[in-house]
Image (cartoon, rainbow, N blue to C red; front, side, top):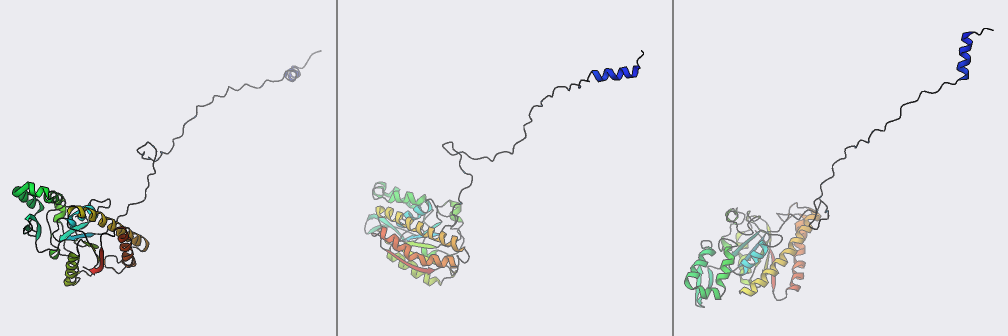
Length: 297
């Protein structure tokens, strides 16, 4: 019996199932590293640990100070040095109130006398060294003058101070404390003897307050010898720090508006705190009697 060839092919396909076509094995692609954003650089500390990059901003405002004694040589210059080289590096001026600069000489009746404003500390040092180095080394005068000539050029008289006039020459000379005091104004005056305080207050009254600018005038009674000047310098710096801290607190709380003219809230609040600050300081330094008044430049 003959078989239809088309039927035979159909029966053969039905009897033998078709096999699926094998796919080639999947090849895994290597992972691709995605770029990462750079990390912020963190400066290491001295012991290797990371320290935060941000820090509280330093206080930028500093009160300006003036120190005064009779001859602008011993007490006022020790205080000048302390203030100018402190951590705050305060702007400082210093003056004398005497008619002349008087230093101890060969005897009580023979002082060494110099003019304010025109005689430098270096000139005094070399002159006394040439006269009698042993005498002036033993009584401490040469050591004092050597310190002074490394602070500023020479003694200045308070009565000759042109308030508000530019003081650029001290900056050019590198006088300590001259930066910030180039405007010729101060916020606080420290005198080191009651007669100097009287002279300063009287002179400020005679000037008639041309700038209409408030200034606090303190007297810290310091004996005129090298040992007491060292103690007094430390005490004045402590009072200056307390005043400066209070000034920054009030400026931070109320803003700086009107500070220079004494009519802003911050300045008035600071002025009101000064007597309490002085009273607290006086308890720590009972051996240094103090006076205070508010005057005007």
